[in-house]
Amino acid sequence: MAFRVRSVTLHIPIEPGDITEPAAFIRGAWTRLNEIKRRVEAAGFNVWSLRLSLSPSEELPDARVLRALGDASAGYGEDLLVAAVHAPYTTTNAERAVEAVLSAQNMYASLLVENVDETYMHVHRILRRLGPHASRLALLFGGFIQTPYFPAAACLSEEECFTVSLLYPRTISRLGSNGFNTVAREAGRLEEALRIISSDLGVKYCGIDASLSPWMSESVAEALESMSGLRLYEYGFIHTVRRANELIEETICSAVSCTGFNEVMLAVAEDDLLKRYAEEGTLTLDTLLHLVFGCVVGLDMVAIEEPSDELLRRIMLEVYTASRVKGRVTGLRLLYAPRGSKKLYIDETLGETPLVRYTMERLQRP
Image (cartoon, rainbow, N blue to C red):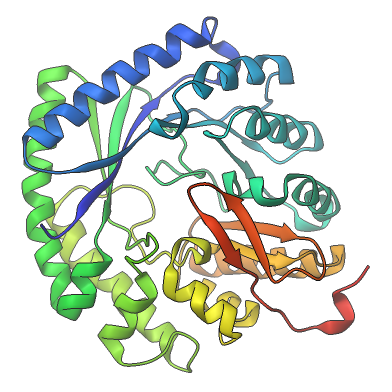
């Protein structure tokens, strides 16, 4: 098999404040997702995770409402991931998003940043408060996005629908650029099954996010290096990223209906080779920021020693600018570690990740 189904995500067009019976709501979504999973696996495709996403809110409800939703989802643990909170960045919304993320280990949130200078000081405080839990909070630049990838996954459709993501770095590592054609053929067969499932269950199918994403030993960095012969930290590697993005569009997204990002993802804490490079010191924050301009997800799952607020502002400006240059949604997931640390323990699933080093020494301390 050229890939695994990384996730099936059910997008429900409702804001968290409009859910009157959280337990019944989560239970109903869980039932529908499991039926989709059962049918996808009957068609011959392994499904790794089930996810639920809700609509963005202009103003998030109070913490009590969000905690009730967190309590309702907590019992499902890692079997059901829930991106319930999506909102523009305001101080109030950010505080409530933090409460939601901390209410349950399977709760995720995204906040849309429109003005870096007005938000960076508060962002600095909430990242310090969240620590490793910031793995479940995305700062977005350029808009919300309907994708199966968390935490950014929002419901932007007017009716309930489901989307799918794929896990296929090993195919690219093995076959190089030709691997994208192999994935495209298999994805076409998957989509045929998804359309039948959609018709049978009466749940709209909203597409596949064909992004090349990692999971530990299934390394995107390794896959891209096999394509070009270049190391990720070497000059010219951004061209490899760009070429992979073009191949995703030319092959997979020509064979199926695509939604979401559909580009290379370099999530450091989820990629064994990236973690090795971080530990060696060959992968730096400078390199990652450079690659943001060719890697749509932005600066993703990067653990660093807690910086000064001014350095955070400059990092946010880099990601914001990349979003404007590319004209695409770009994200930031930055995890603060205590000063003097070498690694950060995130959770039972992700384990420990090495810190990514950064320069600009005069900005490291407040």
